[in-house]
Length: 339
Image 1 (cartoon, rainbow, N blue to C red):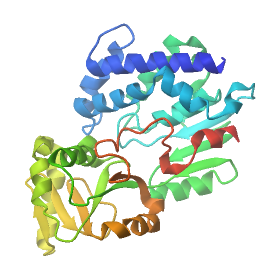
Image 2: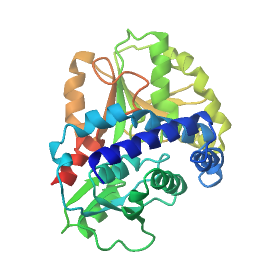
Image 3: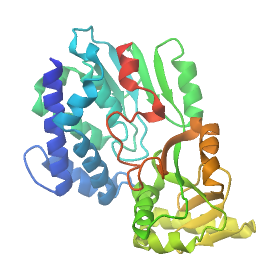
C-alpha cells in the first residue's frame, strides 16, 4: 500500500472509533460498542466509561489532517522501503494502551507481530478487525502471537521496570525500544481557577489513575490549601462506587493510619506528603516546592516522567489526550522504525 492509502484507512478507522464512542451503531462499530459495554466483565478496571474514553481519544486523533501533518515530518515514509517484521509487546494498564505502537508500525509500512496483554486483548483485536475491513490489504500486515515470539527483525516492548530488565536481556541482540515505568506530575502555582483544578482532576482520576500519563504527584507552593483540591474533585467521588478502587482506598487509608503517617482524607482520595513520584490507586503524593525551582526538580527526574501538566506545560485535563507526535518516553517511535 502507498502511504496515502494507509493514511486514508486510519482516518476512516478514526471515524468509526469516534462514532463507537458516541454509541452510533453501524456495521463496523457494533463490535466495538459491545466491547465498550462489556469489557469490564473481562477486566473490572475497564469500565464502560473508561473504555469509551480511550476509544474516543484515539478516534479524535485519527483524522486525515493529523495523520498527514504527522507523517510529513518523515519524508522517507513516501519512499519505497523493505518491510520489516516488528514485534510489539503491549502493556494492559488502560484500554488500547498499545494502539499507538500498532499505528506506528503499520503507518510505516512494516509488518506487525503483536503480543497483547491478557488484560487488554479483545479491544485491540476488534480495532484491527475493523481496520482490515476498511482496508483488506492490512490483513497480511498484522499477526497476533499467542506463544513464543519468533521471526522478527526489531522489537518494541512496554512494561514495568522489572520486565524491562528481562526484555533487555532477552532481546539484547535485536534493535529494540524498551519502555519502563513512567508517570505524570503536575505543577500548581496557587493561581489556578476552580475550573482548572476540575480539569486537573480528569488527569488524576481518568482510568482510576492506572495510566502512565495519569498524574500521581503534585508540586505546590508552601502552604497550599488542599481543600481547594478536594472541593474541585468532588465530582470524581463516584469512583468509590467501583469495588476495586474503593478497596484500594480503604487499604491504603488503613496502612497510613497504622504507620502514623499524616495524610488528608477527602473521602474518595488520600493526599500524602511524599517525595516519590509514584503513588498507588486512590492515593496522590504531593510536595511543596518553589515554582521557580520546579524546572530543576523535573529535570532531575526526567527518566521517570511521562507528562507534566500545569503552567507552561500540558494544560490540565489533557494528560491522557496525547497528540500523534507525543511519543512515549520522548522516544520517536517512527524514527526508530525508519532506522
